[in-house]
Length: 367
Figure 1 (tube, one colour):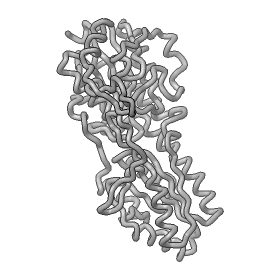
Figure 2: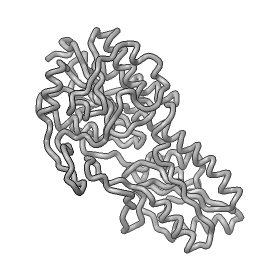
Figure 3: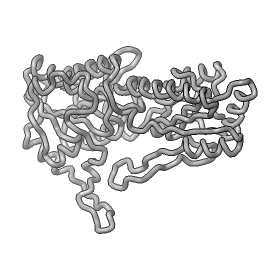
Figure 4: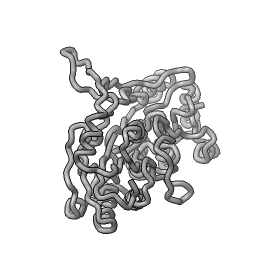
Protein backbone atom coordinates (compact mmCIF):
# COMPACT_ATOMS: atom_id res chain seq x y z
CA UNK A 1 0.00 0.00 0.00
CA UNK A 2 1.41 3.39 -0.95
CA UNK A 3 1.42 6.11 1.63
CA UNK A 4 -1.03 8.18 -0.46
CA UNK A 5 -3.58 5.35 -0.17
CA UNK A 6 -3.91 5.75 3.59
CA UNK A 7 -7.40 6.60 4.75
CA UNK A 8 -7.33 5.74 8.46
CA UNK A 9 -4.57 5.52 11.04
CA UNK A 10 -4.36 4.50 14.68
CA UNK A 11 -2.27 6.08 17.40
CA UNK A 12 -1.18 4.66 20.76
CA UNK A 13 1.03 5.58 23.69
CA UNK A 14 2.92 2.68 25.26
CA UNK A 15 5.16 2.14 28.27
CA UNK A 16 5.64 4.62 31.08
CA UNK A 17 3.98 8.01 30.73
CA UNK A 18 5.94 11.24 30.37
CA UNK A 19 5.34 14.92 29.64
CA UNK A 20 4.72 15.63 25.96
CA UNK A 21 2.61 12.61 25.02
CA UNK A 22 -0.49 14.72 24.49
CA UNK A 23 1.50 17.18 22.41
CA UNK A 24 2.36 14.35 20.02
CA UNK A 25 -1.21 13.04 19.94
CA UNK A 26 -2.37 16.57 19.11
CA UNK A 27 0.20 17.06 16.34
CA UNK A 28 -0.42 13.68 14.70
CA UNK A 29 -4.21 14.00 14.85
CA UNK A 30 -4.50 17.60 13.70
CA UNK A 31 -2.07 17.13 10.82
CA UNK A 32 -3.69 13.87 9.75
CA UNK A 33 -7.17 15.40 9.68
CA UNK A 34 -6.48 18.89 8.30
CA UNK A 35 -3.48 18.28 6.07
CA UNK A 36 -3.97 14.69 4.94
CA UNK A 37 -7.72 14.13 5.20
CA UNK A 38 -7.30 10.89 7.15
CA UNK A 39 -9.42 9.45 9.95
CA UNK A 40 -7.61 8.96 13.25
CA UNK A 41 -8.42 6.34 15.88
CA UNK A 42 -7.01 6.61 19.38
CA UNK A 43 -6.00 3.23 20.78
CA UNK A 44 -6.53 3.05 24.53
CA UNK A 45 -3.83 1.93 26.97
CA UNK A 46 -1.09 1.17 24.48
CA UNK A 47 -0.92 -2.31 22.96
CA UNK A 48 -3.60 -3.40 25.41
CA UNK A 49 -6.07 -1.47 23.26
CA UNK A 50 -4.98 -3.43 20.19
CA UNK A 51 -5.26 -6.70 22.10
CA UNK A 52 -8.73 -5.93 23.48
CA UNK A 53 -10.01 -3.85 20.56
CA UNK A 54 -10.42 -0.66 22.60
CA UNK A 55 -10.28 2.25 20.20
CA UNK A 56 -12.17 5.47 19.55
CA UNK A 57 -12.28 7.95 16.73
CA UNK A 58 -10.46 11.20 17.45
CA UNK A 59 -11.83 14.50 16.18
CA UNK A 60 -10.29 17.96 16.30
CA UNK A 61 -12.10 18.85 19.51
CA UNK A 62 -10.65 15.75 21.22
CA UNK A 63 -7.12 17.09 20.84
CA UNK A 64 -7.79 20.77 21.46
CA UNK A 65 -6.20 22.33 24.55
CA UNK A 66 -4.04 19.30 25.36
CA UNK A 67 -0.65 20.68 24.29
CA UNK A 68 0.29 21.64 27.84
CA UNK A 69 -1.42 18.70 29.54
CA UNK A 70 0.75 16.06 31.20
CA UNK A 71 0.09 12.34 30.90
CA UNK A 72 -1.81 10.89 27.94
CA UNK A 73 -5.50 11.19 27.06
CA UNK A 74 -5.31 7.70 25.55
CA UNK A 75 -3.90 5.97 28.61
CA UNK A 76 -0.91 3.63 28.53
CA UNK A 77 0.31 0.23 29.70
CA UNK A 78 3.72 -1.35 30.22
CA UNK A 79 2.41 -4.90 30.58
CA UNK A 80 0.79 -5.50 27.20
CA UNK A 81 3.25 -7.33 24.96
CA UNK A 82 1.14 -9.25 22.38
CA UNK A 83 3.86 -11.88 22.06
CA UNK A 84 3.74 -12.62 25.79
CA UNK A 85 0.47 -11.47 27.30
CA UNK A 86 -0.87 -12.55 30.69
CA UNK A 87 -4.27 -14.01 29.78
CA UNK A 88 -5.04 -15.25 33.30
CA UNK A 89 -3.52 -15.83 36.72
CA UNK A 90 -3.20 -18.99 38.80
CA UNK A 91 -4.57 -19.05 42.33
CA UNK A 92 -1.13 -18.17 43.70
CA UNK A 93 -0.95 -15.15 41.40
CA UNK A 94 1.38 -16.68 38.83
CA UNK A 95 0.60 -15.26 35.36
CA UNK A 96 -0.18 -17.57 32.44
CA UNK A 97 1.21 -16.13 29.20
CA UNK A 98 0.00 -16.59 25.63
CA UNK A 99 0.91 -15.17 22.24
CA UNK A 100 -2.15 -13.07 21.28
CA UNK A 101 -0.69 -11.52 18.14
CA UNK A 102 -3.56 -12.91 16.08
CA UNK A 103 -5.99 -10.77 18.09
CA UNK A 104 -3.99 -7.64 17.30
CA UNK A 105 -3.92 -8.41 13.59
CA UNK A 106 -7.66 -9.15 13.60
CA UNK A 107 -8.53 -5.93 15.41
CA UNK A 108 -6.35 -3.77 13.17
CA UNK A 109 -8.07 -5.24 10.10
CA UNK A 110 -11.51 -4.98 11.69
CA UNK A 111 -11.00 -1.28 12.38
CA UNK A 112 -9.54 -0.68 8.93
CA UNK A 113 -6.31 0.83 10.21
CA UNK A 114 -3.85 1.32 7.37
CA UNK A 115 -1.00 2.11 9.79
CA UNK A 116 -0.42 2.73 13.49
CA UNK A 117 1.66 5.50 15.06
CA UNK A 118 3.30 4.09 18.17
CA UNK A 119 4.66 6.53 20.76
CA UNK A 120 7.01 4.99 23.27
CA UNK A 121 10.43 3.82 24.35
CA UNK A 122 12.50 0.76 23.59
CA UNK A 123 9.86 -1.66 24.91
CA UNK A 124 7.13 -0.17 22.75
CA UNK A 125 9.36 -0.15 19.68
CA UNK A 126 10.39 -3.74 20.33
CA UNK A 127 6.71 -4.75 20.45
CA UNK A 128 6.01 -2.94 17.19
CA UNK A 129 9.06 -4.43 15.47
CA UNK A 130 7.96 -7.94 16.44
CA UNK A 131 4.62 -7.42 14.66
CA UNK A 132 5.99 -6.24 11.31
CA UNK A 133 6.21 -9.80 9.97
CA UNK A 134 2.41 -10.08 10.30
CA UNK A 135 1.85 -7.34 7.76
CA UNK A 136 1.19 -4.51 10.21
CA UNK A 137 2.62 -1.08 9.46
CA UNK A 138 4.00 1.28 12.09
CA UNK A 139 5.71 4.60 12.47
CA UNK A 140 7.44 5.09 15.81
CA UNK A 141 7.92 8.28 17.81
CA UNK A 142 10.65 8.18 20.51
CA UNK A 143 9.42 8.90 24.03
CA UNK A 144 11.15 8.34 27.34
CA UNK A 145 12.45 10.36 30.26
CA UNK A 146 15.47 8.01 30.18
CA UNK A 147 16.64 9.30 26.75
CA UNK A 148 17.93 5.78 26.05
CA UNK A 149 16.61 4.95 22.58
CA UNK A 150 19.21 4.04 20.00
CA UNK A 151 19.58 6.11 16.83
CA UNK A 152 18.21 9.33 18.34
CA UNK A 153 20.06 11.90 20.42
CA UNK A 154 16.90 13.17 22.08
CA UNK A 155 13.55 11.78 23.11
CA UNK A 156 10.68 14.02 24.16
CA UNK A 157 9.93 13.93 27.88
CA UNK A 158 13.61 13.97 28.76
CA UNK A 159 13.98 17.76 29.01
CA UNK A 160 11.02 18.04 31.39
CA UNK A 161 12.26 15.18 33.57
CA UNK A 162 15.70 16.81 33.78
CA UNK A 163 14.08 20.08 34.87
CA UNK A 164 11.95 18.30 37.47
CA UNK A 165 14.96 16.43 38.87
CA UNK A 166 17.07 19.59 38.85
CA UNK A 167 14.39 21.49 40.77
CA UNK A 168 14.34 18.69 43.35
CA UNK A 169 18.12 18.72 43.68
CA UNK A 170 18.09 22.49 44.11
CA UNK A 171 15.60 22.17 46.97
CA UNK A 172 17.58 19.36 48.56
CA UNK A 173 20.66 21.58 48.32
CA UNK A 174 19.21 24.16 50.70
CA UNK A 175 18.15 21.66 53.35
CA UNK A 176 21.49 19.82 53.06
CA UNK A 177 23.28 23.08 53.71
CA UNK A 178 21.06 23.93 56.66
CA UNK A 179 21.48 20.57 58.40
CA UNK A 180 25.08 19.81 57.28
CA UNK A 181 24.12 16.47 55.78
CA UNK A 182 25.10 14.18 52.97
CA UNK A 183 21.98 14.11 50.82
CA UNK A 184 21.43 11.46 48.14
CA UNK A 185 18.81 12.00 45.46
CA UNK A 186 17.85 8.95 43.41
CA UNK A 187 16.57 9.32 39.87
CA UNK A 188 15.07 7.02 37.26
CA UNK A 189 16.86 5.85 34.12
CA UNK A 190 17.16 2.06 34.45
CA UNK A 191 20.51 1.13 32.88
CA UNK A 192 21.16 4.57 31.38
CA UNK A 193 22.47 7.53 33.35
CA UNK A 194 21.44 10.39 31.06
CA UNK A 195 18.84 11.85 33.43
CA UNK A 196 21.08 11.70 36.49
CA UNK A 197 24.09 13.06 34.61
CA UNK A 198 22.22 16.05 33.17
CA UNK A 199 20.32 16.89 36.36
CA UNK A 200 23.42 16.37 38.48
CA UNK A 201 25.44 18.74 36.33
CA UNK A 202 22.64 21.30 36.16
CA UNK A 203 22.30 21.39 39.95
CA UNK A 204 25.99 21.36 40.81
CA UNK A 205 25.96 17.95 42.50
CA UNK A 206 29.22 17.00 44.23
CA UNK A 207 28.99 13.30 43.35
CA UNK A 208 27.22 11.78 40.34
CA UNK A 209 26.71 8.01 40.19
CA UNK A 210 25.47 6.44 36.94
CA UNK A 211 25.11 2.80 35.81
CA UNK A 212 27.79 3.09 33.13
CA UNK A 213 30.53 3.89 35.69
CA UNK A 214 30.45 1.40 38.60
CA UNK A 215 31.35 3.14 41.85
CA UNK A 216 33.84 2.41 44.60
CA UNK A 217 32.16 3.08 47.95
CA UNK A 218 35.53 4.10 49.41
CA UNK A 219 35.88 6.76 46.70
CA UNK A 220 32.37 8.06 47.40
CA UNK A 221 33.09 8.30 51.11
CA UNK A 222 36.41 9.96 50.35
CA UNK A 223 34.64 12.64 48.28
CA UNK A 224 32.29 13.35 51.19
CA UNK A 225 35.10 13.51 53.74
CA UNK A 226 37.26 15.74 51.55
CA UNK A 227 34.45 18.27 51.38
CA UNK A 228 34.14 18.18 55.16
CA UNK A 229 37.90 18.76 55.55
CA UNK A 230 37.67 21.78 53.23
CA UNK A 231 34.98 23.29 55.42
CA UNK A 232 32.07 22.25 53.21
CA UNK A 233 29.52 20.94 55.67
CA UNK A 234 27.27 19.12 53.21
CA UNK A 235 27.46 16.93 50.10
CA UNK A 236 24.92 16.40 47.33
CA UNK A 237 24.97 13.01 45.61
CA UNK A 238 22.92 12.50 42.43
CA UNK A 239 22.48 8.76 41.95
CA UNK A 240 20.80 6.79 39.21
CA UNK A 241 18.54 3.91 40.20
CA UNK A 242 20.75 1.62 38.10
CA UNK A 243 24.04 2.61 39.72
CA UNK A 244 26.02 -0.30 41.13
CA UNK A 245 29.32 -0.88 42.93
CA UNK A 246 32.37 -2.22 41.13
CA UNK A 247 31.90 -5.98 40.90
CA UNK A 248 28.45 -5.71 42.51
CA UNK A 249 24.83 -5.85 41.45
CA UNK A 250 22.09 -3.29 40.95
CA UNK A 251 19.54 -2.86 43.73
CA UNK A 252 16.19 -4.37 42.73
CA UNK A 253 13.08 -2.87 44.30
CA UNK A 254 10.67 -5.54 43.07
CA UNK A 255 9.89 -7.93 40.21
CA UNK A 256 6.64 -7.49 38.24
CA UNK A 257 6.14 -10.96 36.79
CA UNK A 258 3.46 -10.05 34.23
CA UNK A 259 5.50 -7.25 32.68
CA UNK A 260 7.72 -7.59 29.57
CA UNK A 261 10.40 -5.75 31.59
CA UNK A 262 9.83 -7.36 35.01
CA UNK A 263 12.78 -5.99 37.00
CA UNK A 264 12.11 -2.68 38.75
CA UNK A 265 15.25 -1.03 40.07
CA UNK A 266 15.24 1.24 43.10
CA UNK A 267 16.60 1.80 46.57
CA UNK A 268 20.32 2.15 45.84
CA UNK A 269 20.33 5.60 47.47
CA UNK A 270 19.04 4.15 50.73
CA UNK A 271 21.67 1.40 50.70
CA UNK A 272 24.38 3.96 50.00
CA UNK A 273 23.09 6.35 52.66
CA UNK A 274 23.44 3.71 55.37
CA UNK A 275 26.87 2.64 54.19
CA UNK A 276 28.25 6.19 53.93
CA UNK A 277 26.91 7.07 57.37
CA UNK A 278 28.50 3.96 58.89
CA UNK A 279 31.88 4.57 57.29
CA UNK A 280 32.15 8.35 57.71
CA UNK A 281 29.99 9.10 60.75
CA UNK A 282 28.39 11.85 58.66
CA UNK A 283 24.63 12.35 58.83
CA UNK A 284 23.03 11.06 55.62
CA UNK A 285 19.56 11.15 54.09
CA UNK A 286 18.20 9.60 50.90
CA UNK A 287 15.37 10.88 48.72
CA UNK A 288 13.89 8.78 45.90
CA UNK A 289 12.16 11.04 43.37
CA UNK A 290 10.18 8.19 41.79
CA UNK A 291 7.23 8.89 39.54
CA UNK A 292 7.21 12.62 40.17
CA UNK A 293 9.81 12.69 37.37
CA UNK A 294 7.21 11.47 34.87
CA UNK A 295 4.46 13.94 35.68
CA UNK A 296 3.53 17.54 35.17
CA UNK A 297 3.40 20.06 32.37
CA UNK A 298 5.99 19.60 29.61
CA UNK A 299 8.59 22.33 29.29
CA UNK A 300 8.65 24.38 26.09
CA UNK A 301 11.46 22.31 24.53
CA UNK A 302 9.47 19.09 24.91
CA UNK A 303 6.31 20.67 23.48
CA UNK A 304 8.19 21.82 20.40
CA UNK A 305 10.08 18.54 19.91
CA UNK A 306 6.91 16.49 20.39
CA UNK A 307 5.09 18.62 17.82
CA UNK A 308 7.93 18.24 15.32
CA UNK A 309 7.98 14.48 15.87
CA UNK A 310 4.22 14.23 15.33
CA UNK A 311 4.39 16.17 12.10
CA UNK A 312 7.33 14.07 10.88
CA UNK A 313 5.39 10.84 11.58
CA UNK A 314 2.49 11.95 9.38
CA UNK A 315 4.87 12.96 6.60
CA UNK A 316 6.51 9.54 6.77
CA UNK A 317 3.12 7.84 6.49
CA UNK A 318 2.25 9.98 3.48
CA UNK A 319 5.48 8.88 1.77
CA UNK A 320 4.89 5.22 2.62
CA UNK A 321 7.91 5.06 4.96
CA UNK A 322 6.52 2.36 7.22
CA UNK A 323 8.11 0.50 10.11
CA UNK A 324 10.53 3.29 10.89
CA UNK A 325 11.26 5.49 13.89
CA UNK A 326 11.38 9.28 13.84
CA UNK A 327 14.83 10.35 15.08
CA UNK A 328 16.69 13.50 16.06
CA UNK A 329 20.38 13.81 15.19
CA UNK A 330 22.58 16.89 14.99
CA UNK A 331 19.56 19.17 15.07
CA UNK A 332 17.86 17.35 12.16
CA UNK A 333 14.66 15.30 12.24
CA UNK A 334 15.29 12.02 10.40
CA UNK A 335 14.24 8.38 10.64
CA UNK A 336 15.61 4.84 10.87
CA UNK A 337 14.25 1.25 10.75
CA UNK A 338 12.43 0.12 13.90
CA UNK A 339 14.60 -2.98 14.01
CA UNK A 340 17.63 -0.78 14.71
CA UNK A 341 16.20 0.32 18.08
CA UNK A 342 14.36 -2.83 19.17
CA UNK A 343 15.71 -4.63 22.25
CA UNK A 344 18.53 -2.13 22.76
CA UNK A 345 19.37 0.74 25.09
CA UNK A 346 21.46 3.83 24.44
CA UNK A 347 23.74 4.33 27.40
CA UNK A 348 26.17 7.09 28.39
CA UNK A 349 29.67 6.65 26.92
CA UNK A 350 32.22 6.72 29.74
CA UNK A 351 34.08 9.50 27.92
CA UNK A 352 30.99 11.56 27.07
CA UNK A 353 31.64 15.30 27.10
CA UNK A 354 29.45 15.81 30.20
CA UNK A 355 31.33 13.09 32.08
CA UNK A 356 34.61 14.74 31.17
CA UNK A 357 33.24 18.15 32.15
CA UNK A 358 32.16 16.78 35.53
CA UNK A 359 35.60 15.38 36.21
CA UNK A 360 37.24 18.65 35.14
CA UNK A 361 35.06 20.51 37.64
CA UNK A 362 36.05 18.20 40.45
CA UNK A 363 32.81 16.26 40.58
CA UNK A 364 33.32 12.70 41.75
CA UNK A 365 31.92 9.99 39.48
CA UNK A 366 32.50 7.45 42.24
CA UNK A 367 35.42 5.69 40.56
